[in-house]
Length: 166
Image (cartoon, rainbow, N blue to C red; front, side, top):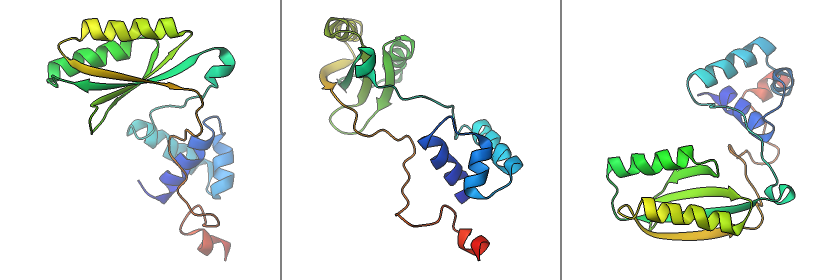
């Protein structure tokens, strides 16, 4: 992945609905090159898709994080937990982590009662796998950027922009 690919990803991460022609204009690169690069990023799995961020509060949803401390990390138990998370309509993220907790889940529900039901499902179905569960109610998402723009203010998007401009 070169600097052009990284810049394409940065632009898409800021607005997943941005048109290819707009990316080409911002980067001063041919439309066909941008289209081809996006296709290759998709094919290689570096770009898995495009998404929308919702303000859950405005649609009456609650956002919880669950931190799971495991007592049995066997591959079989991980696969069962993964399948549960993958198939559950309210579990929107599932991470493997390092530290005191081995897994993190993001759960979006309409009520605290619905959340408690999911936690109870986890405890009953995975009593041999899960040692401890901590939950956190997220009351406001301050920042979520899938591929953060790490440039310092004023730096060109591409390393060779200065040469093109001059």
